[in-house]
Length: 299
Image (tube, rainbow, N blue to C red; front, top):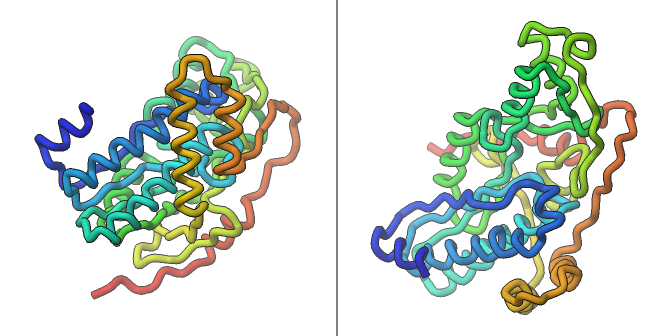
């Protein structure tokens, strides 16, 4: 009700929806809260955007929505599906609002980023904690992420899921070692590094898109369009209504909530396993995305 009230008063033209629960292990043990915020929170804001006649609605999504192995990733993928469905509804009803999603990975220096955690651990003299020696992540700087999100929002005509080019994945262990050296210490001897084990729901390497989705180049060399498909509208509506009933009930079974979510959007699990091995290569989908040549910019 408050969201609709605020939108009704201020009539925003462009809305960037970034609010979400993003902590993967916490969402594994609190799936109801992840669903309420990441799915229904998105639906609330998106429907308010439609009601107030906003021009553009941009969902800030995540690479964890690709082949999700966690509740967090699955809820963000459902959020993408919701805004795609709302875009279809908006076009059919001849409303002006156009909905777009933008996927990308980790942002250096943002809240929850690993960099400030490592800085604090180094300041205390260690140990620096790394979940797994082969853990890799894509990173962008805050200015990079902001500029590309705004550019993707401007080029979207509605219904797209854009994927930002994030460069090569970074090994978290190498990042920790480099940060220790840049702080004037020697890793392992002066500042120890401890492997704590991969946590529930965590992948060793995130993917920007699935092999089935593929990607289409846009006129911006660092923005691609994922060719995503979801369940039909009727199945989506039935699952969301069931989830709404379950998550609003005080005595619901979390297993039933997870079953409904998995029926709508099958997602795997990633168990804890701190087994050292060789660094994982970039996934095939990454290579396909890098091989795409963007068409020339429109005049």
